[in-house]
Image (cartoon, rainbow, N blue to C red; front, side, top):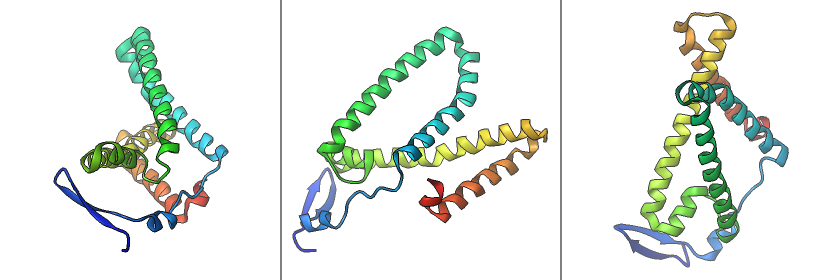
Length: 168
């Protein structure tokens, strides 16, 4: 491509595209405020029924209070950081893009790997608890949980195959 230069940093070489590359790319809105709010509320509600039970059993009220305060502080730091970085680095890529810009290609690589691990494990946790809920609701034996897991994956994959518009 025209306007590209090659950069070597930390044992990694990559191309730096010219401004015309970024002019063709930009953020596209797929979900509205209400859809994102509903997604967030749904994620939090499902976590309330799964994570809190174990937390209270292991840590008690005091442990859960301390944990909640620590997590609230961490989330405030996260949201303020993202709010500062988003206008300063207005390109797609999320945490990977921020880390690559701030820490170079290896920082971006490590962050990208961590995000991929998150994207693999999160659906697994969700369908695990769906299986637990469905086993309790339907009265099926615990041996049936893998069937509920598979059903959960099929529903989520089906929604994604049909497109973002159907999901939101």
